[in-house]
Image 1 (cartoon, rainbow, N blue to C red):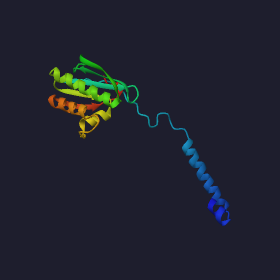
Image 2: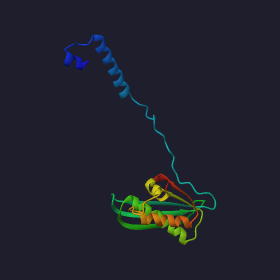
Image 3: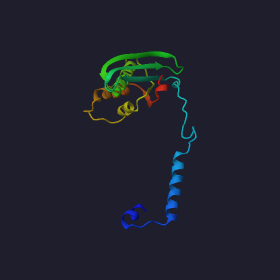
Image 4: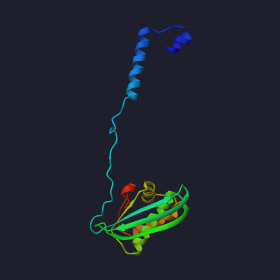
Length: 171
């Protein structure tokens, strides 16, 4: 309509203008109408779950202030009844959050090897760390030494699962 008015100096019939305006009004109200508060929201109840009998669950976490920043790594080991077995905590200096997550996994696996633990289930709240550990990586990858250690320790242990968990369920 606007182009015809500008370039052909002709006005469209009034009925076209009214129809177009009605369509725009309907579109406006469909976009701005109130959406019910619960529409699209899903509530997840997240909590730590113990491993099956005979298993040890290790929950690890790494964090840094900023990316990169002052960082630390930690982990907790529990049995199938949720009983505390051991834990780890380590100051890392300056690194990224992903690096801190990998150090936490590496240190936890090392403790499991050193103590002769078997039937391990590992949970971590970093999807990136899990993808790096379980996937293929180039030897020149920034985190290659940590990843090689993790894979080596996992081969020595009977690691049944390495899973992502939300922060709230991470032990």
